[in-house]
Image 1 (spheres, rainbow, N blue to C red):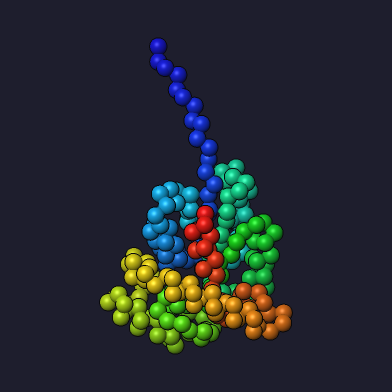
Image 2: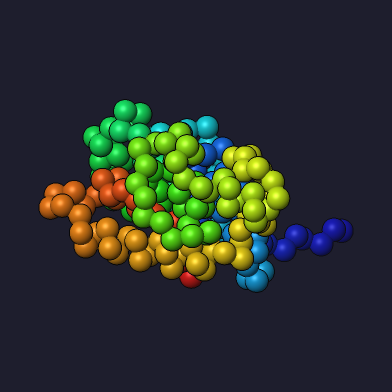
Amino acid sequence: MPKPRKKDTKSPEKTMRIFCEGEKTEPSYIEGYIGQTRVDNLTTVVKVESTRKNTPVQLVEEAVKLKKSRVSLPDDEFWVVYDRESIAKYPDALHAKAADMAKANGIEIALTNVCFECWLHLHFEHTTAPYSCYDDFSRRSNFKTLFKEKSGMDYEKSSKFLFETIKSLIPQARQRANRINADSLRNCPPGKTAHHQINPYFGMPKLLDDIDNF
């Protein structure tokens, strides 16, 4: 007579779930950061979710939907990662709607103003230059020159070597971003304190802090 199977008594683990706007650059960077940690099980409890959504409101809606589903635990944490982009593409009203929805549902936002590459740029040097969109950044900043000097390769959003190239520079980027954010918040005009209204602004340090402390 076969022995009865033991019941699985292992409790589900609290999970951090991250939704990204970019299909490759942001997930590659965040997954690289998660993977280089020395915490054994972090890659199983901090996950970049697969999604085809790419606007602030859509990403927050996806996070809210999963948070309210039966697969999530009450204390799971949820993040959405996206860029400010140009005002013509994503008007202030859209960002405000996404921020309000996230706050109402306990969802955290890591917003970069104006594009994720501005955050990557801080790995190489301190800069407070504002940009109107990615094309403006690509044209006027020296990020691609610095990246090629460091890696020997041209920068591409889909580069699988991105994280390996700049991972040693993350501490400098975090310090620079925190300093810039503090100065920007201190000097922003009254009524213009929302993160999408501050240029530049970097939400990645807080996400990385939360991953470290998870």
